[in-house]
Image 1: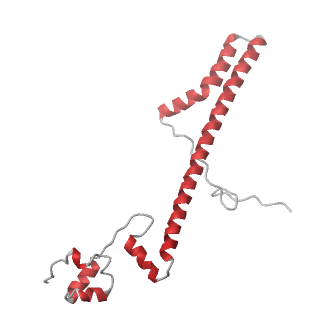
Image 2: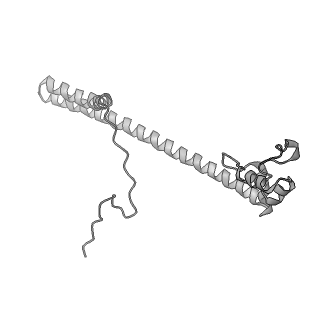
Image 3: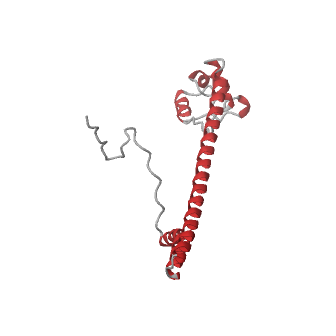
Length: 174
């Protein structure tokens, strides 16, 4: 099969331009070469918007369609940005809350140890309370990390019915 030489760029025969059979006939190729050419046409694109020439061609369908597509892409970008902001703020709040809870446990254990010591108990009991309250949670995390024990998985989202997977909802008594 003899195929003609590849068309030059200045002939305006880019892959996106070779989209209809009429344009293929203009190239004056034999029918089997046209079929081969059609099967080998591939256009790759990455990103929220189609290439500019393709986007501009959508105005044939509807005058303001390119503007709508750009608007939709803009809305999608804003939506993703807002979701990322919400996730980041939620993670920050969780970390702040965990630090406050840890500080509360530590202060409570120190106050409890002081109360035990004032009540006349052994200093060993007071020291144990302080060590367990202040260093216990941190020691447990370090030990779990060293042993390769994974952190608890996040809770699964609730099903529409309110019951977890595999569980049935309790029925109301009448």
